[in-house]
Length: 594
Image (tube, rainbow, N blue to C red; front, side, top):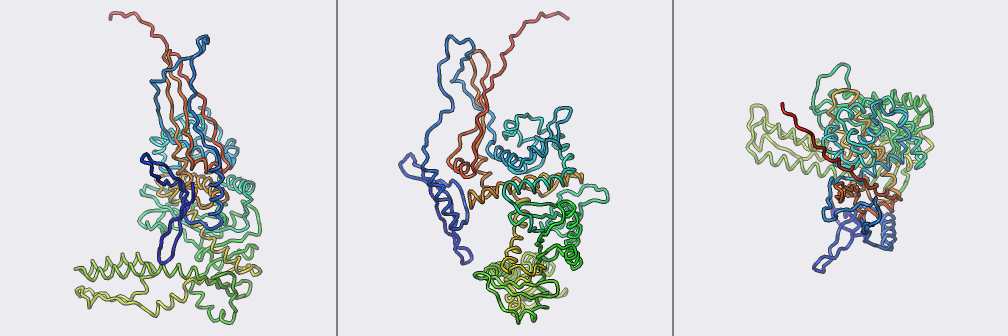
């Protein structure tokens, strides 16, 4: 195996993507390359780490391991059972590798110890702990509805084998009743996970990133007031659906400290005050640094934080930069790193930091240019079409919505209600004065903080780490499919989000381990690789009419062994064989005439 580089030019910039590739000899003598792992864009140190890993791995001896040892049946052993190898059958292929990895992550976080006392088995023998573990593994590996888990996924997975259980875990009513038992333990779980991540990875919770997102409902079911399912600003662009708002607090490494489920019409600026009180009640007072985007804190909330002794770093609207622009002029620029400059402006008990990033200038300029080009192209298409005024207004409105803020850079002349659409009544041109103003503010961020003694470079690093919250939302919505929600009861709606949060905890645990051991590899890519490891039941008929059943997972491929070696994991022993009971002889019965 070796590292292969692929180059791609996008927006004038060259991107390099890396993959672990192996050569395979074909029947015609030629060599074909097979991609073992896709690493994406990695830096030089990560590339060197992968090269060393592959070199060490290739030094190991390779050998074929027989699945079944052949041997003759001893003639003098009365307990020996003969098997008919010619009638061997393979049955029930099911996904094993990703299920096993989820169980490993579950054990690493110590969730068995946490939930065993809180979810004891019922009097009827229902093991709620294993039901919850199945729900979380399903959400992590192949998320969907509880009905799909019941009808399809559980039987096509090896969770029953790994948990030494049966289909009773996936009973439809059992899954829903398990959801009803979770929410009372939410606060205790947050404290447990904070302690566990500190023990495993030395995680620090001194810097906290806070942001909000929303998730929507496909069906508008009857509701009882008060209800959290409300219409509001949708981050998913589904304003036609009811939604709930989720507030998430994570560390710069992505470890979640807490989350809250709020009503769908909750304004961002009203969430912080109550959240601060809950965090202090749950975790105690500490010198935490809160990093937030603009729009979340209000002046009253910031004053409350200063009174509490809490520290904050928030973005401010660019309109405030216009008000403070003259005050910043005498301040000198400080070069904090390559392509990054800052200015300080102390005001009363706060400090304003103006940061200019050349990298962000290029990124924002490229994004704006792409949106503007698409907008202009759609306007040109409208001019070539035969449209009524109403049709034109609808198409222009859709184009403006897609272009976002870039649409404000184009001056439009639209026909009046009594006019026909012609090139004279429908015109557009670039607003060059406004474009110059926008270009002047690209890549410039105005930060507001009460951390007067911190280095500006460190403050900027804190702020750009808000992308970790955005990444957490992306993983919750895409990888773990938290949206849309189909539950009707409010308690189960929150329990659905709770299960997705637990699955995210497993994913972020795997993500942190991959970051240290296998840089460039995402948790989703690792899970997809392990999903290819299957388990099958080998059925061997015996000479006395029974069946010898050997449940066996497939032998790991080179990419699996590479990942196992990097993560320091070892596969468990194969399950012990089973043999069916001796068939009962058929006892003839006497027939009686009616």
